[in-house]
Image 1 (cartoon, one colour):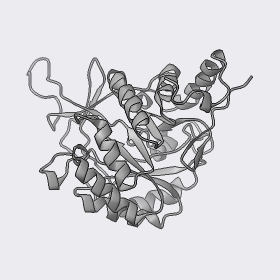
Image 2 (cartoon, helix red, strand yellow):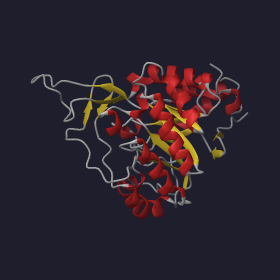
Image 3 (cartoon, helix red, strand yellow):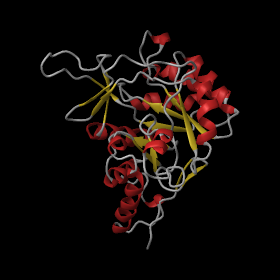
Amino acid sequence: MTASLETTLGSIPLKHPIINASGTFDVLEADAVLEADIFEEFPFAAYVPKTVTLQPRTGNEPPRLYETAAGLLNSIGLANKGIENFIAKDLPRLAELPAPIIASVAGENTADYGRCCKLLDGCDEVTAVELNISCPNVELDGKALGCDPGRTEKATALARAATSKYLIVKLTPNVTDIVELAKAAAAGGADCLSVINTVHGMALHPWTLKPVLGHTTGGLSGPAVKPVALRAVYMVSRALDLPVIGMGGVTTAQDVLEFLAAGASAVAVGTASFRDPLLAPRLAGELRDLMEIRGMSSMGELIGTA
């Protein structure tokens, strides 16, 4: 018996459940530096480019990355070329990928989400849009609107009104009750939820005892956050009848198996891609082995069975 890895996100078919987390795999850079035909043998089942905003952003003051004993801290600050440059310069090349493109957008206020989605709505290359609602927001004095159920629903509703594309909302774990935020996104018209973004953290230089990141604090990713993410996927997938993309510390095929059992329909790899950008095909092969050992022949026998 050969287990099938085919799955779906709503109406979007995926050849296997492993995609990339936004900002952790630049396919255009990878195609230029890796000795592999990335566009012919694309490792992920869907591609999520780096988050773009309405206007270009330079990002936070460096240093922006710091590896801790428990995971990777980042404070990139959404550095990007702006959505119009993304549409004009990146999308024509990305359209050659043999996988659906999930554009990721963020805004400085709730209205920006609608504006970004409206610009992407006419782009046939884009299959879905993911709203990154974890970034600092001017309406909330620098706090993430993803921490506010009312603004989460409003930003999602504005995006929903601006596009007919499949709409994904990426939730932050830095809240008291992530299910409350998930319900707010669903009320705004989300088709799918990404669970979770990074966990707030900081690190001090061992000698100076000053913050090592230029922005002082950042988002922690990597294996340390997996138990937090797994719980969130389990809670959200049982509270709402929406597909969930699970992410947070996925490094091994066993991790993928557990996120699917917890309720995810697809699983995103992030930090692990920095060490091995071509990790996904190996994870998919090992996932099939783990399913077959357990007598499972399809994703339907695994998803949500925890």
